[in-house]
Length: 264
Ligand code: 5BU
Image (cartoon, rainbow, N blue to C red):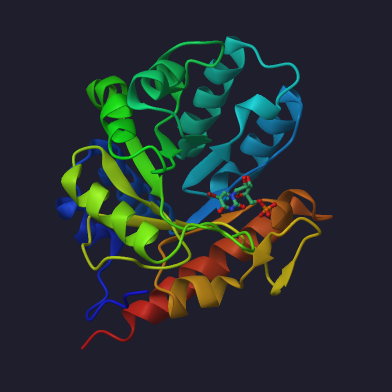
């Protein structure tokens, strides 16, 4: 984990970002005062759209797993995009591509989901080597999309650590036009262009029954220097998801402000 010497605002980082999706994300974070990404991992389109509309005002980014949806149709993506426009948030399909470049590129562009048509951001494992970035870039870059590399994971026993994580950072630096940052547990590089997003976040530390490890908002943003908290069950499984979303938004943003307060 690298802690920045002099924390920068989202606004200051806009000019460092090379990719248009990264620039827009920083703008939204600044404008909406939100570093919250919500991931409503539900299995029905109507539930997802309802959550997107209800929680939209509090978030900068909505993360999806479209392969969970039992009633997915391409029409759904149009409805989601119009809600994203209404509430000014971006979309991140958490597809975790992991094949050779040629196939990952096709999976991104074709099939039922046509992810590159509607998702601003997607992500990839670096297990196959840098060809996966090239394959996805050929499809995504002409559409102005951005890619996150899975440099670390939140689950216990993850193999994504040490040299593997450092390799992800090196690949990202070679593809700054398309790679906008990382899924990681904290800041991995001081380069202000890269956005670090952290899943496995709840109000209380803990675990689920299948290896998920939860950290608190403050530990992720303030101590580990990440930029965006990704919250799923902490919001959608709560009794009052709207209230929880408002809480996570202010917890996340206040932790960011605290980090900035350490500037000289
Ligand atoms: P939760 O309900 O807040 O535990 O959901 C976490 C989400 O983040 C879920 O959609 C996972 O697929 C996603 N995730 C994760 O939990 N850990 C990781 O390392 C990565 C993604 Br990458």
